Amino acid sequence: MFARYLKVSPECSFCHEDLSPQRADDLPAYIVLFIVGHIVIGGMMTVETYWEWPVLWHIILWPLLTLLLSLTLLPRIKGGVIGLQWALEMHGFSKNNKEKIF
Image (tube, rainbow, N blue to C red):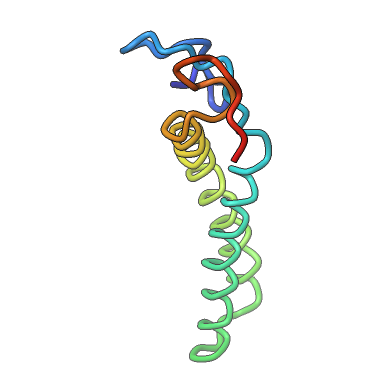
């Protein structure tokens, strides 16, 4: 589905479906922010409640975990959003090429 990290190919290499009408925009980033924020903040609160880690561990672990989770989840979530748009026939994916409004 992707030509590069987040660049969507103009068409599917397997079924040749036209992917140019996709409009994922900012939704994947918002979903990733929501998921990663809950994981990282929940982890930080759990660690602070039950253990006493040195500050250096926190400075290293939490930004690194945030970066790795964000970079790992973003293309997967974007692919899911595009797949959802295709399944719901949104943004030019409709069979009769008419825009549906949901």
